[in-house]
Length: 88
Image (tube, rainbow, N blue to C red; front, side, top):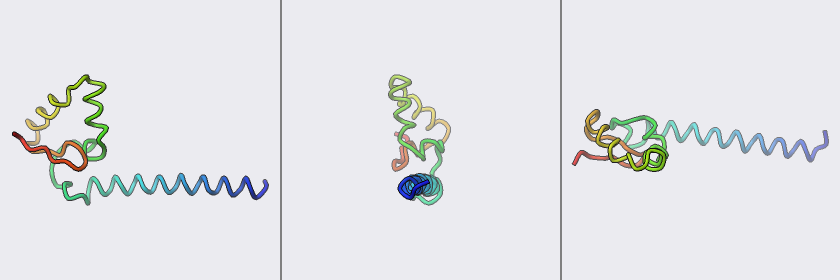
């Protein structure tokens, strides 16, 4: 193995490891350290905005209904990572 291919493999491994560490740190922050972490709601919604996108895109705009269900379960709830949805 020549040094050029070895250094590319090392660089790719470092980038992959760095990305994995970033994702783990982001998950820990959003679930446990974020200022809104103490509020109830689905863990998946606390992790990513894709939770809302799923209901809006795949379920054809059913996020409003889902928010209503979440309010019945939790009251005020954390609907996306940086947003607390109060019951209106």
